[in-house]
Length: 115
Length: 115
Image 1 (cartoon, rainbow over the protein chains, first blue to last red):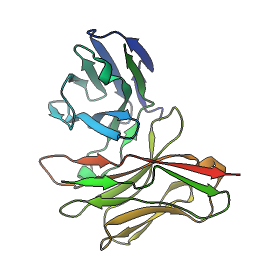
Image 2: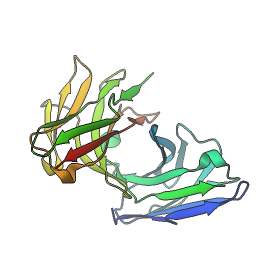
Image 3: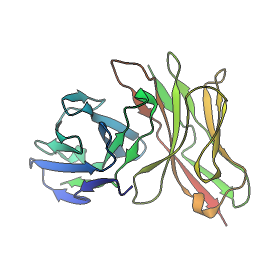
């Protein structure tokens, strides 16, 4: 969805390096999310933010941190990357208007490889 | 524990035949159920959702899903499959409760429509 963009689209890095994945959206949504996708495991929630001052841990937040710089921007950082963080990472947004049962809009994903 | 199950890793169907992709859930409380589709090298796209009301929900691209509370299922269906429907399909559930946020994805089912 062009309304949600992620940079970079692909990244190869080495163990121990700090990595930042960025997400921007033009949908005007308050809620933003970071997921990782692994084969056979589906999508798992890393962090979510319901507004600029609200940051919450998801299912698998260990080894990750986030920053909500503005309503439109939500960044995911790997402070010291390790090989088992190799995955496809997705950013998503949703409207807060109907609470927790709004559909989510996903970015195109970032494929991260940690060697 | 709350969970979503997609019992089939892959479903094969001939073009023109009806298709079903299965999803069952285990949650306490009233679930809100979603289907998403992922095409190669793309993020997930919303197809349809069940919040309340009519158990048969119609969505994008001719897809529909039936909510069955007694069987705790939310199977995705289409009367006549197209080759272009070939993709990875994810079922998801959220409880829609305030406080702790839960948005759980299934592991995905790969649909292959054969010409």
